[in-house]
Length: 298
Ligand SMILES: Cc1cc2nc3c(=O)[nH]c(=O)nc-3n(C[C@H](O)[C@H](O)[C@H](O)COP(=O)(O)OP(=O)(O)OC[C@H]3O[C@@H](n4cnc5c(N)ncnc54)[C@H](O)[C@@H]3O)c2cc1C
Image 1 (tube, rainbow, N blue to C red):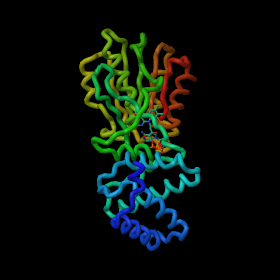
Image 2: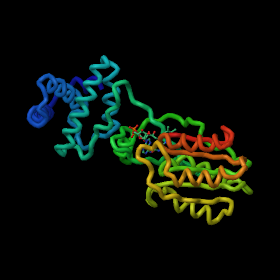
Image 3: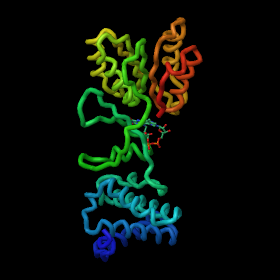
């Protein structure tokens, strides 16, 4: 790798760097000093990948480059390098030199940030395991995942987490999830359904439209075969700030699980933002024990 880094840049590379410099000056109107450090970062990046076809660059190449470079630098210098690589990748994409935007592969200078994703597979099924995710506008991790292609390598660690269900509980269970937050709930449901003679369970899946009801056919099929499983879908416009649940969901909990005096139920709630805590508090303040209301907030 050292020899590769130190090999003299090719004429093609120098032409590319010069075109990029011109673009920074004319299109971006950047100050001379800024152009200088952008160009330095760009040359370093392009040298590392030598004469490789830029179309073959992957997000992992980009991440790997920054991760290798940053520990040798001060924080400020590492930040500048990350910014310059992002800028170069934006340029390459705009010019059609890469067929996808690779800037999301640049990690933060303090090192790669770990993001949790849930194993959504049915526990009794064999590998490969399944994860489920959606695109968050401007989100670094989800854009990174969406940029991956078959055959790309990713680093992962785990599994970790406590929002799991080892065995079917000895009481009625209610599972609630919104859109992709069905991921941890799916294995739980199958764990219970696998137990012969299990107590009644209900899944309430909320989403803004039927397309967001992931695993719909699977749950509908399972409910058709198992009278102990009720599958209920709620089509609602979710609050974009995810701070409060729509009235429909709060009302459903009030009338169904708080109006009577029965408190031998267990709840498993997964969703995004503070709306999850709102449901947790509604149930706990309504008399359910703390451990009867388990939740995971994304
Ligand atoms: C224990 C745990 C398990 C998780 N499992 C999954 C999973 O299986 N699938 C998955 O898609 N995400 C999952 N997440 C969320 C995931 O880790 C990221 O937060 C998400 O992909 C957004 O990351 P980002 O860098 O793209 O955007 P960020 O800039 O980090 O996120 C911006 C905002 O989006 C919100 N957000 C988080 N997740 C979502 C989402 N899925 N949809 C819309 N908004 C979201 C966050 O609350 C945050 O405020 C999990 C989170 C936790 C804590």
